[in-house]
Amino acid sequence: MKEPNDIILHAVIKVAVVIIFTFSINLFFSGHHNPGGGFIGGLGFSAALTLLFLAFDIETVRQNIPVDFKVLTAIGVLIAVFTGVGGIVFGAPFLTQAFNYFDIPVFGKTELATAVLFDIGVAMAVIGTSMSIILSIGDDH
Amino acid sequence: MMNNLIILPIIIPLITGMVMVIFRKNIKLHKILSLTALSASGIIAALLMGENKIDGIQTLNLGGWEPPFGVSMVADMFSSMLLLITSIVSLCCLLYAFRSIGQERESHYFYPLFLFLITGVNGSFITGDLFNLFVCFEVMLISSYVLISLGGTKVQLRESIKYVLTNIVSSFLFLVAIAYIYAITGTLNFAHLSLRVAETGQSGLLTIVSILLLVIFSLKAALFLFFWLPGSYSAPPTAVAAVFAALLTKVGIYAIFRLFTLVFYHEPQVTHLLIGILGAATMIMGAIGAVAHWDIKNILAYNVIIGVGFIIAGLASFSIEGITGSVYYIIHDIIVKALIFLLGGTIISLTGTGKLKDMSGLIRNHPYLGWMFFIAALSLAGIPPLSGFLGKVFITHGTFEAGYYWLGGIGLMTSLMALYSVIKIFMNCFWGETYLSEEMESGTTKGVMVPIACLSLLTILLGLGAEGISVYTDLAVKTLMNPELYIHAVFEGRTAP
Image (cartoon, rainbow over all chains, first blue to last red):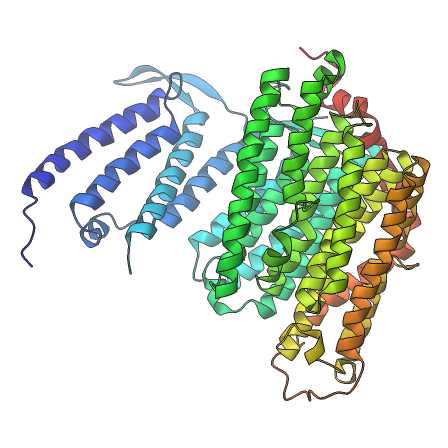
């Protein structure tokens, strides 16, 4: 069979994926005070990954992103839980968060919060879970 | 009292399970980690029981958000006892799984899933919030979906479809009921709900919603709506079936107890009578099923159903005696159901069949197995001095006291039928001519006898030492029967908004 001519698909998706990645990172960080956050950011991220899997075949993407998504899920959950455990270590209730303002060069006065660490865990868990589901359904081996 | 210990029974299994997912190939590590995690959560449960005894109910407001705004975790004596017994029983089932579950399942995340199941069970026992209860139920159910279908034999897949569909429908209804409750009362925190319902009175609408919740939990607890149970509990391998039989229905029962002693206790002539009628029907139908079947797995599954009906009968009486009986009986039932499922599974693995008519005379080669089965059977029926006795006495007494003579009578009658059904297994399996020599057996009892012996010993000790644990059960009953203790502990004396 002749190879399908999907050069337009490839070209468009290469650009679109970058935009979606940027947007999902934006969604992720805006979640601290506005609508958004780890869950929706992670979903956006995995939507972009799914697009990649659709446009190129699974083998190619696996070679370029050699991540076991099940392990990614586990690491994400561990990060989130251990951020919560941090509260216990400092004698506060589980999941207590802390934040403070720091002067950082370039960014100026910036708020750094432990909740972001928790959110990173959530995002990783969401990306890992959704990609494992999609790959295990899509993979026919 | 703010107490971070409460959260540990949830996060220890969760963390160890996740670590195991990362190191997927190392089965030996899986075994060590799962043993450690379950022992650790058992020790913490024991510590919690000690603190409950001295300081009363322990609470934890996650993230420091005060109730009713945040999620609170509450460990009263009833929860702590269930946590401890969950750890002990799941530890025994885990030991059994080490010998029997097989490499194929082990390499497909058996141990992490087992721990996630326990995470959900533990979470359901200590949450103080209706929505969080839903989340913990889901954690437990999703793990159980995988455990029931893991291995992928034909019968497993057939039964898991029924199991998954039933539970998805009930989870959907659960969400709907939560939405109703939130719309009517404006809160989901158990303590706050209890306050609000007491303030405004339990209107007809709230009673209806409470009955909807009862239906949902009945589906999970196999109270009356048990059509899915015999099939799904006979499909998975023995160790999994034993955990399911011991714990999953009990989580549903716990939820019914929590709601109908803490929140919806104002209209017992409607809700608790309905609970009693459901319990009676469950016991009768379960007993008929247990007597009628000639297959070990089915008989045992129907015995689970009888047990559910009996525990619920204690709640229906809604008296101190009845609830005390239920607390005793729920602990006994968790142990003895795990025990008898492990025994039944061992018999099936020895003979290669579940049909009673195809087996005979096992006692010659397996005397210990036989006598332990006998002990389990007597304990199941509530013969003194084994652990089932005291619960039966209290529940029956409680129902008589409440004037529900029919309920107590049905309880006693079905106990006899349950005894008949398990003695039927004993006589057919162990008595008679031995025509299976040890070489011809399709399995072995090597290594699996340790957990069975532990559980048998536990049911004997629990019966003999009932006096010793009465301090704890009395405290559990006290908090169940006095909602204001729970509310006071959650709000730490502040007035609720």
